[in-house]
Each structure stands twice: as C-alpha cells, then as structure tokens.
Amino acid sequence: MAVATGQRALDAIWEKVELNERLDFEDGLVLMESDDLLQLGELADEARRRRGGTDEVYFVQNLYLNQTNVCRVKCKFCAFAVTQKQGDAYTYTPAEMVEDAVAQRELSRFTEIHMVGGENPHVDFEYYVDIIRSLHEALPDVHLKCFTASEIHHMTKLSGLSHEEVLVQLKEAGLGSLPGGGAEVFADRVRRLIAPGKEHPDFWFHTHRTAHGLGIPTHCTMLYGHVETYEERVDHLLRLREQQDETGGFLAFIPLAFHPENTVFERRGWTFTPGSDDLKMIAVSRLLLDNIANVKAYWIMMGLPLAQVALHFGANDVQGTVVREQIFHAAGAVTETEQKIDELVRVVRAAGRIPVQRDTLYNEVQRWNGAVA
Ligand code: SF4
Image (cartoon, rainbow, N blue to C red; front, side):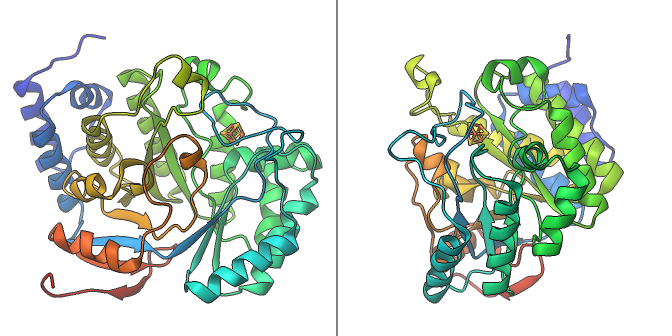
C-alpha cells in the first residue's frame, strides 16, 4: 500500500490529534514507518493528555501464578510449554495453588492474582472451576484475573459447554477478569506461521465479547516483533478498537515484545526487539487505541528503565509488582521477576509522574504526591 510518508504526513496526524479526530489505517502505517521516535512520543503523549490523561501512572500489587506448563498447542514462539512426559512438567492441584498463594500473601499484600497456563489436555473443566473457587474462598478480597481467551476456548473443548457457559461458571466461582493473552497477532498469515495449532482469532474476540456481555472486564495484548508486518500490527490494533467500540470492556492494552530464547526462532538467529521498536509500539498503540483508557509499559519484557521512558510515549501504567513471572523468563527475559513497590514509586516519580497504586479495576489504593525524595 502506498502511504504518504515524511513530515507532511506526520503534520496531518498532528492536526487530527489536536482536533481529537480518530486516526485511520493509513495514519497508523505512517506512524509505524516513521523513524522520528521523539516526535512519535510527543504525539502519543499529546493524544493521551487531550483524551483526559493526567500525570498519574498506575501499578498494581499482584502475584503471578501458572497452574500448569503442560500444553497441547505448541506455539512456535513459546518457551514455557512442555508435554506431560517431560521431566519439568507440572500441574498444581487447587489445594497446592491455595497453599502457595496464602503463603505469598503473608509476604506481600497483593490485591490481584494473575494466572495463566498451558492448555493441558489431561485435566477437566472442573479443575479450572475448582482452582478459582478455592482461591476465592481462601482469599476473598483478592481479584482473580485468570485464564486467557485461548484457555477459555480450551475449556469449551474439555467440557462441551459454550464460551458463555464456561465464563458464567467461572464467574460464579469467583473469577474477576480475563488477562489479554492469546491474541498474538490476529492476521491469518502470522497465525499460520507462529501458532498454527491455536484456534482462529475469531474465538479470541468471541470470548472477550462474551465476557464483556457478562460484566467480566478483560485486557488485550499484541505479541509483536517476529514475522508480522507494520500493516498487520495496525490491523490488529484497529480490530481491538472496533471491539472496544462495540462492548467497552477492555481495561488496558499491553504490547508484548517477542522474546526468542529457547524457541525455534532463536535457532534461526532471531534476537530481542530493539528499544526503539518497543517505544514505537507504545506510542502507536496509544495513538490508535483512542477508546482504551490505559496502555501498559510491561517492564517484565522491556525492563524498568525503558518502561520509565515509555511513560513519555503514551504509557500510563507500569503493570505491577508481579512476583515470580515465568513465561517470558523461560524465553530469555533478563529483567527481574519481581519489583518492590518502593522501586516502582521511585521510577515513576523520577519520570516526573505521580505514582498511583490501583486495584485491577483501576480504583485507587494509594498515591504518592509531592516532590521526588
Ligand atoms: S503460548 Fe500458550 S497456548 Fe501456545 S504453546 Fe505456550 S502455553 Fe501453549
């Protein structure tokens, strides 16, 4: 597709941003193809502020859990999944998960459990309901943000139930929201290359649409930096925007940088995404997704120093304390697996912003006003 490039094209986008006009596919391509990183950051921050964004930067105190690493799907980008027969395979029982979470709660007052895992064919749907019910009973004040749309789809296969029936049962058991994983890149071409065993993206949208209809808020993501083109990135973002127009249930968008270590792509010589691409993704996401309030700079993948810079490229959330991230560390992430609140506060303040600890639904828990200490 021929797209006008250069400063004239960016000037036209500036005008649209100043008038609060919606950007289109061609605008998205111009932004993706621009090498003027600082201007992209300035544009994204301007757009964020014109849509009501403030100096507040959010984070949540959370705990990451993975119920199983056994998975039938074999996505080519995944370094986390194993088969049941591999020595490092694990599938925790609901009782083990509760014991672990309760012990962790003694150490940190997390308000959210973020839990995802493999699509294990050796468990039944009741296993998932039991986990949610048990965690909810043990920690009733903790928000359970659990299971990707792919896992929900897997549960329909295990149970013969519809997506709605699965979600209703999980909600009744205590599920609070869905994370955004499993989206990868929606384009069929990309899907065939990196995740041929995964269900069609229509199921991802169906699951999120159904969740929103049931009053279950969700998150959305894109795994970028592998075989996708700029056109496919923009297409992905605009499909999310369209869904949000329809249902309004996405709390945040999280761009996820692809990590190649321990995947087939590492053997082909692939490396990590450059920081410039990470910042570009944050900026373009913020500009195109005019109806999703929050864009996260996911420090687990980009590192805390770059996440701090990303706060000037349209991001307004640095995710959370996390505690024990495993999926991206299996793929070579060299970041910490946990951040202390003090460190997140320090980093946000040093960026000239106001740290606000939130719960999963963006209600304020605590804020740090005043000058940097
Ligand atoms: S990304 Fe998820 S679905 Fe794909 S192989 Fe890994 S655990 Fe399984």
